[in-house]
Amino acid sequence: MTTTTAQRTRTIITEASLPALPNHIKLRHDAGRGRWHVLAPERVFEPDEIAVEILKRCDGATPVSAIAGVLSKEYNAPLSDILADTISMLQELADKGVVKA
Image (cartoon, rainbow, N blue to C red):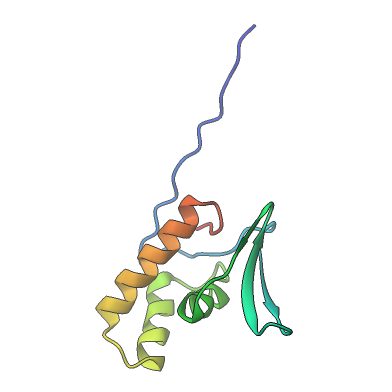
């Protein structure tokens, strides 16, 4: 009897990546509590305000560099800082299976 194990490859987030939420992950707003939640099977995440703004833009068509560019203008912050923070956050979520690219 042979057993094969499927190896999971790590998604690496770069500024050219096109991040999206997988079909089984949902970003939902709880109006009663005024909070956003990322709903995953058997897990719930409460992202902060900046993370929500990034996740709202994860449509699978917009590159990370464009997401960071918009946020840099909205928050009047250096693009290099926003880009580094965005990549770091998305990488962490990709490692948890919450974001695909």
